[in-house]
Length: 154
Image (cartoon, rainbow, N blue to C red; front, side, top):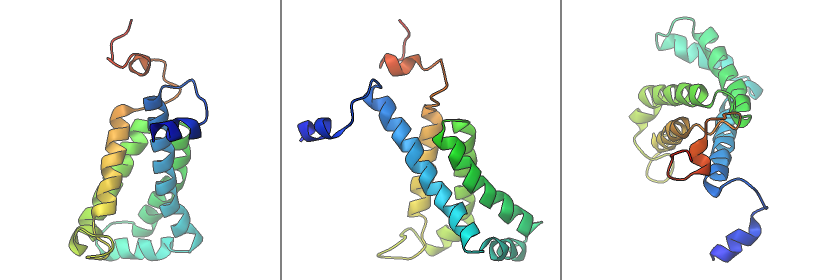
């Protein structure tokens, strides 16, 4: 089976673990971007702002636009490997707030045994925090741990 995967991957000079982290970063960026793009494309920013205001958040509409723009611009930067740690931690905090305000009340499961639960958001938060910890910015010159799996420079 490993022969199949080795044959199906394009040739690269990057170590497999480095390539995996880059693919994780790009994939997470896509998942985050779809939230902001969908909200903007369906004219749902205003209702989101009204919901925030009704929940006691000051400047609900402004906050809704800031979140939406962050979910559109942040992933572009993330895909480019710019500001990985900041964007990942900020996104994780955003989704933790979503868990606290919406998803925890609905339970754990998103589908199946429940609806709108926290499991997808928890997966995003965990992935974002692990990516921030790994911080695979391609512009970094101090990533010696990618070339030496033990993490020490030689």
